[in-house]
Length: 380
Image (cartoon, rainbow, N blue to C red; front, side, top):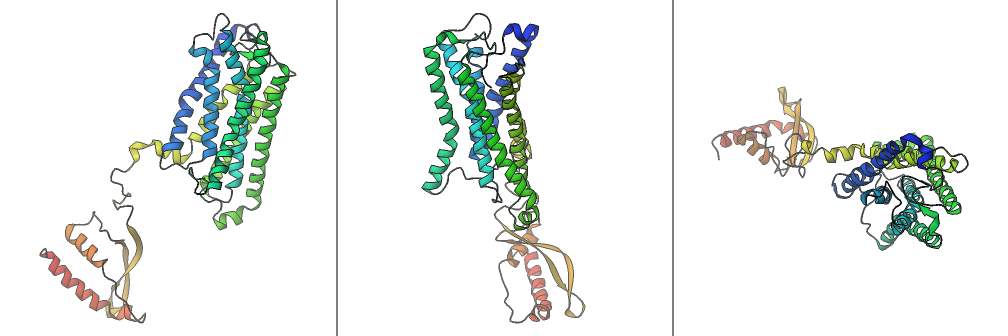
């Protein structure tokens, strides 16, 4: 992720072309295919929670993939040096990628902290108050503010020292040979990852300490817990990548830092795409076409499952099978006559003065039901 002068084609050796192909595969597969699909799912799927911080994180890695493959799409990733203007543009853009992606990670960690006691573990995409809108927009804009700031710094240095910009010193992409800026980018990215990791460690420690209390109060759900675990896993992966880049300042280790940094976008996709709600959104073949549940009942019906007491010997109640009562709807799985009786039985309510009347009047209600059965048999 940092653009230090440590990888050249001669240093990589005979595997240079293979390493370039692997590097481009990660950038294109994640930044151009996988992450856009995941982002679209997070934005438009009705059954998926809208978490702006996660959407912003995905967008930052899409930007990273696009910036990394500029030379590939113009056909100048091999052969002679690319044009000066194109090389300066890519070098400045890639210098700003690590601060942007790591800032987005801090925003996601902050989201986990703020929604720690939210049973739904989610934030509305469109807040209701003006203060909430300003706060959400400001928070989600921070990564792109960092990106614009470092792009401006990189362009300024590159225009003043165009001889320091070329593709040969990095082989995979154009870079700016300016150690002060590259070192600052690596240090800032590592510190931001440490901040995100510290927030998540605090959340995990608090969860462990107050586990039973949180579960009892309904503030800790299975989906919220697994989402936090996924964020921790991704943070550890990104932190390892930035740490290796930081170590490579003093101990050059070949193409490993660039290959590991290129795989972070794919790791982001694999970690978060395995969420059950996303997999359910993609499983279109399992969706119900009628809009009902597995029993064929409409979702808007009020369904109550209770035990029915029938009149037994001596007028005493006896427990029979479970009965389903639908308010305002009848069960389409029943025969027409029984469906009519079910609908009629749900439209009246009998008020009793004493609990004993619920049992003493059962034979009378049963007799009235028999009369209705006789009438409905003839279709009236």
